[in-house]
Length: 102
Image 1 (tube, helix red, strand yellow):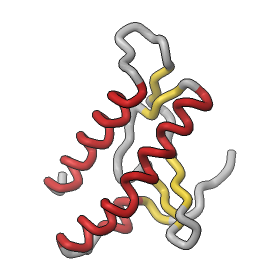
Image 2 (cartoon, rainbow, N blue to C red):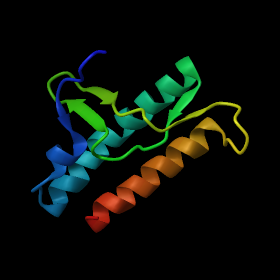
Image 3 (cartoon, helix red, strand yellow):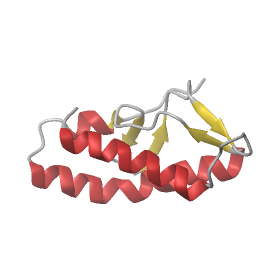
């Protein structure tokens, strides 16, 4: 198993003023979505528990790593939705949780 390098998104956001949170999210959300889509396209699996603690960011390199794959979905399972819908729902839900501070 390869260990992810960097900090979780949650640690990067902690203690940031509202403007800092918005700036960080605007910077990293496209990269997070791209990594989730890359894994989905390459392996046919989707992260089932995507949140700020399961996203590791190397700020120096810009690399995003999704960790903790204990819950995942496989393309083609009954009730499975298309790639874009799954990624959008995961990010939307988790970003709402981040903004609420839950």
